Length: 92
Figure (cartoon, helix red, strand yellow):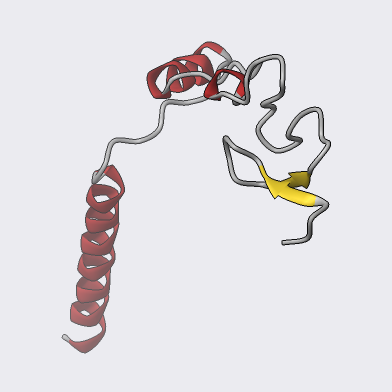
């Protein structure tokens, strides 16, 4: 590493030696290069809040696990039955 560059004490990103803050994690002299500034101001929802937010906005709830397989099995069975009836009709 060049003498002009150092690693951020918090995240390890390469920054200039005289940098006032880290562009990657936001740590700076005022906060003591701490984790307290990491992603400040980003209000991300919790996992459960995300699904509830989608429902509030009118989006459908994601299907339950395995629901697609049930529909696929029913459709496959129906197609096999139709094919079998077609064979019986044409060859009897």
